[in-house]
Image (cartoon, rainbow over all chains, first blue to last red; front, side, top):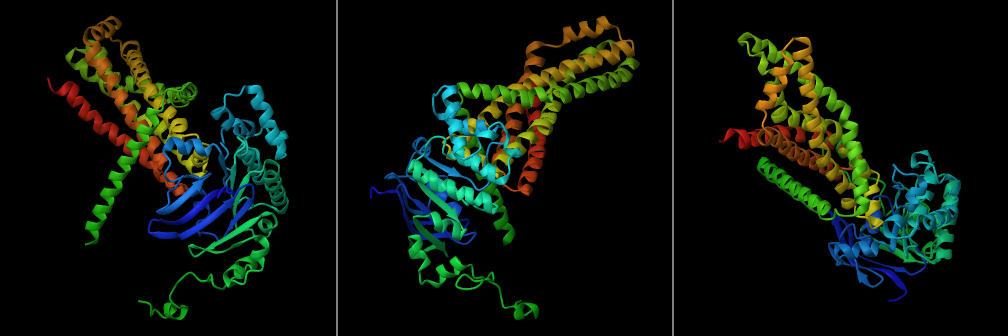
Length: 267
Length: 258
């Protein structure tokens, strides 16, 4: 399976007695953009944390470039993380440093490069996301969209093999959303990096994703290329794609019937 | 039967918490010798130490002055106001210096550490460090731990020194105790190893405990606003109580048993 950078094999994961994944398998092809979609609260971010080794699955295995992540020792895991990076939903920029220092952080930590080389590299990364002019600003001075782009520049600082995007479009206006879509696509093409995009913004991601997984009810309910997904005849997939309020994923949180509760019959 | 289950669950949570606190401490301290961390530690010493100087010095001054005032009114009845110097200096060096510094440090620096680390956790900065292959235990926890342990004993000594000067200010300058007897009886009474060193040992112990509690409470906080508020409160309450409790134990060991 050389063409798959990340293999998730039959994992089961539960958190404080709530089952999140039940025997899920996902393959992330190398150099492509894979989208993982699903309704809120089904643990899409958890999937990224499992791949990053911050959480361990109860059962099953996750491999990165052929090596099992849950089985790694702490130091090997840290070594492996140098070749993956993650764009957090909040950006997670270090608030006490300027944008420049944020992007330079990983380079200063993990390489012996001289300060002038680091400066060049950082400015190139910032140029790629259009924030070269904002290098000296503090994260608190950035707008939400700019913060996410700065975080993206930081995520690509070490030229990782894998970038994981956690809800990159959440809470963005249409312009920043367009910018981010363009950036994700151009980064994937220019650096031929493998990307995993976790999101529930259907339209944006179907435009750029090479392959799509849809998760719901602890399972993979559909996967395929964007085209295949659009033509899927699964009612669950269609409800998700078209944003219908009620369907196989119910509108109501499980409860006794309204009549029973109002008349006090539920006791 | 529910209360039995509650007792069990609570005990388990506490024990697991203590275990995690030890894991954090060992993870942070094993990793220390790195040049970058020395620089980070110096920065933290500035933040927790130098920036706490004002509150420590003002408190020390007033406590020394009040003790001289109170001590004088009692001692003068027995014509023993010459012993004001040793009274002030012994109370400060043995007890008040380490203890009050510990309490102030918990309120001033401990709460700040908890809130800072808790917010780093809530804003995913700690997670993002991990994903950038930088161990937050080395990068965030270790420098702050060392900074607290280095800074607080110094603060305690400064507190005692300023307190002794405050006692001099009130006792000698204002109430008219003889300056020579204030200093000379103090010098004759205070013993280096028994009083000064024991006070420093106390403050080192308090420093370790307070900084450890503060950092762990932040590191283990529930990453929401209520969680951080709770963690900050717990830091101040728990470390103040621990300082007072440990002080009794240490005093008993150092001065109680001969």
